[in-house]
Image: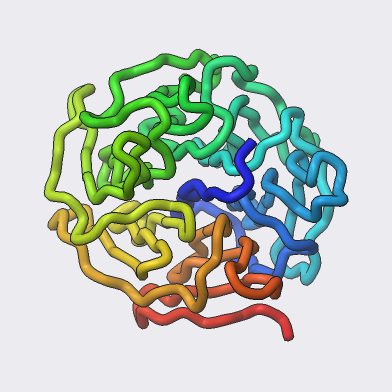
Length: 304
């Protein structure tokens, strides 16, 4: 399982969610995890790596922060450990996506295996929810790299053609649903080794090349989130941020995060994007950052 990489964690603002929750710093250092919002407004944090002394490095741990609470509460563990995987929300249901696909059942506080390990890559993958299904692109080990659709609720996984140019071992692109279309952006190519600016959209079952991003970008030191009810996508990495608008297909620069952090989790709440956790390149302080979309400004909300 990888130890120094990050997947894009995409989260959409949902007007049907319950009362807003005020994010709090995670209960312990964690990176390579996912955070999604439940229908009641709670935040669910799962997977990733915690302290090296924790059992399985905490890769099965699940935590929940309810609206009005100041502390995260421990919940049922994932059935299969997951670090540097992905997540998605379909019809209000949270899914953990990695080597296995698992569904969280809030009322019973348990995880249910939708698709067992054996087909999907273990890590370095990008994943998102789109058109009522889950989608996975790239990943490691290299032999497991590909593009997959996970049918719900059956859990049937179908391998499909990847965007042009994608090969085994390619990893860490941004994959997101925007304007009712599935987009693949950037990523690290294995041969030749390097970050790319490629941008593709899937239309009528085929990948179509669009104008590339203004610079190469990948999801090792960053994260992305969908805003404005699926009308714009923001992608951040170590070189700053880019906003892609669905209506125009144009990119505009955004403010860079406060510091260089690997493998945070991102979630959209109202008009803000929150980063929770992650591994700082310098220092070990917790990460709780808020990005104000309208003001294009980051604010450090980490407790002192």
